[in-house]
Image 1 (cartoon, one colour):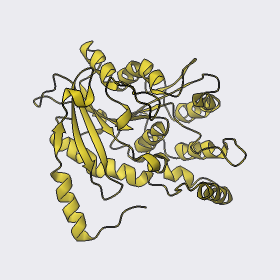
Image 2: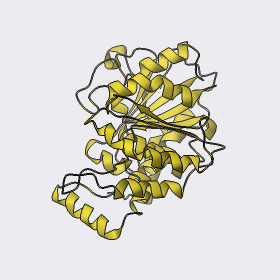
Image 3: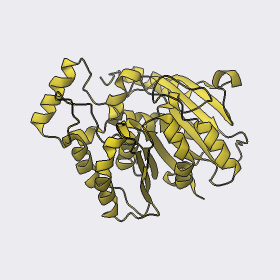
Image 4: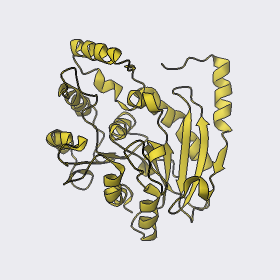
Length: 319
């Protein structure tokens, strides 16, 4: 549940946020391909649970210049050479791709802020709460019963999670790192449920995020129902929310994609591609500011996302 604090505790929390310790990680702690990593351990919040924040900067990072900034979800799955048996099967190796395209001068200078998830409540923070309100009340009741039966927390914290990013994390990054503060150079990205919350962030805060990369976006939203199938009412409710809240095509850019490997989770997204296309095409978007790309044979994992990450970053950061 959203934490409740008194005014005095809130003031103390603000003091702590403004005095966060930002530690540079040694090579053996992260084993990067390139660049340098800084970490804020257990970043406190008045909105959501505390978590680690990793800030990746290129090797030639210089306080005397300005950088675009990408906020990315699932921070623990993004950086480093080591494979990971946890979320998504392996790390994305984002630092490797970022280093290569920067060296090739294909993109503007940028840094990446990796926001760790909270494990068991990841879904609660990443599912767009306002789209849930588009569901029929009886259907929501049935979902609540199913989730309670499986001892799964049904409360949604996505609005609070976005407030944490916008009101607490971004001000600190703006203060401590040499980044542009305006929306034209502030982006957000993630995969799976992280893709869903990236869309939601740009839709809810178009004045903060001008570009979003929504990779293998989990349009299904929730797990299988009691009959073992994904209920289509959930993705359709997400699309209904999107239709009512599309940001201005003159100021925003969106990247979506999906694989289609048989039997893989990504293959379930194929049937919803037309829904996504129509929402953006009917609101002034075209090939210059909107992508929704199908990658034949690719899967729902870090290895597949790594293969196309250069294209994604080039789309977001084209000079």
